[in-house]
Structure formats: structure tokens, C-alpha cells
Image (cartoon, rainbow, N blue to C red):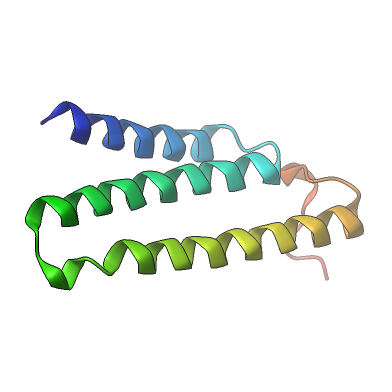
Length: 98
């Protein structure tokens, strides 16, 4: 495994571990998701550059567009949660409550 592949794999795994083990605030969970998406974007960009295939050149841009949609949806949920519950602690959220 090259150092570049190791770096992006470690970035993704650190984001995943942060998402799994440090779930106190909704904002920290969203930041971990964004870090994971950023590492996937950079790894996919480098992969398409290394292969030099025209068909894969649009894949990083599509991933970046989905990442932007995911970020805007997450921020909208964060604002809605902060307005209704007064906090963004994940322990206070009850998904079964209307």
C-alpha cells in the first residue's frame, strides 16, 4: 500500500471511528461524515487520474454534488433540531416521539 493510499484510508477510518465512538453532538457527527466524504472524493479523484480513463472523470464531481446535498440536508436538520429541542445532543433526541 502506497503512502497516499494509506493516508486516505486512515482519513476515512478516523472519520468512521469518530462517527461511531464520539456521538455526543449532531454537529460532530455531521463533521465526521463530511471528513469521510472528503477523503472519498480525494481518493476517487486520484484514482481516476491514475487510470486515465475518460469515463471515470465525472465520478468525483458527482460524489462532490451528493456530498453538498448531504451537507445542506444535515445543516437543515441541525437547525430544526436546535429550534425544537433547544440542543443538538444526540442523547436527548427521541426518534419515536412526534
